[in-house]
Image 1 (cartoon, rainbow, N blue to C red):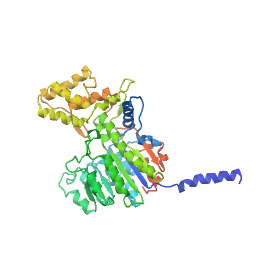
Image 2: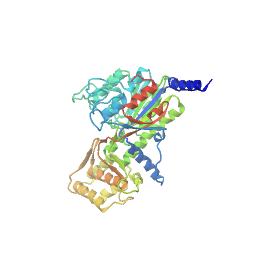
Image 3: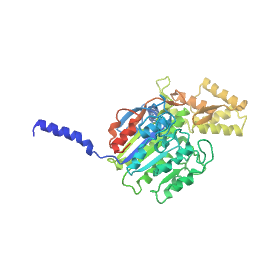
Image 4: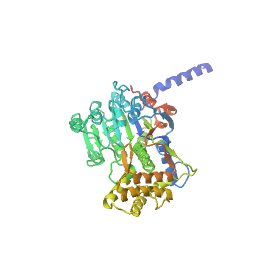
Length: 469
């Protein structure tokens, strides 16, 4: 065989090889809501600082071999909301802010990756650390003109016939968008064939994990979201438990394949509050889900694709706020979220309406390290003392509002001071237009090693897996 013939044979093999490449049949689509590149970077810098060194301690997903960057603008705005951002990641098309699973006119329903997987007779799971009817998870199964149509979004679970849903619960289980009382969604979901299970232990005890399942937190807990990871106590429901349950449910009596979307929803919430320490713990919590997906991949390396990304960045997080020296290790002194700190200040105000300044300093020191292990400047102390005077002396309670919280001003000032000491700055309390990372490993993952638009991500997943999106 001459050189020309050899070259033609080689070229032919190169061209036809992709046609015979094995397609993944297990897809993990992990979305860190609000998780920009700096949320990941800060977490890795913090972990290295705890080891006493300058640099980064990689997370599981940041070590995936293929890395891209994605733009996130919506059809209507340069800065997306989670409705349009989630929809872009789910269906591969831009829409206007606030819309779920539809085009910008709100008249055309768009098919998501999850529906495409279901058409292929795969099992489908949708999981989150916030409510199941929230914007990002909703984008994969619902079609609504407004992300706040929580009751109506929840009812879209029924026609989806997806196999597994999980999260903290439902926000409006018996109240319509126009604030009218309506039949509870729970009997309707059960009538449609879903078994409603509350908590990880109840799931473990459930005999047929191949049932169509809706897994929520136990009764008496907040249905809006799971607790922040920094606030977890023993026995609290976690995103890792949800993910493990999802994997068990989707692999029971199933050899065809599955699609699983898992959202780490509260990276966004803590970033809205500009709470750096809590954000770090949320990223670490999300990393626990990535660990579970990676362990699955190691058992099925030729059949699995894992893609990790975000719907947008939140807060305009900056690392380094003047000095060349980073002091991120101080965030280890913060023991609770800004929201929980607000509750403790409120409890002190109830117990001791005229609490002394030293009482407040002791409370803050216990939970943030300020004054006890972290030096506080005279100007910073003056700022918090002024808020103390307004609250405990003049009995006028001031609050600081972000999208998902209204926190005590003493608490938000304390966290802001800790942020400054820890070398972190925030540009806003809302979303930004910053690029988000895309990490990938597994069958076909190399296609994500480039600059992308968020709409490219589901299209590429569909192409790799042979799904009709």
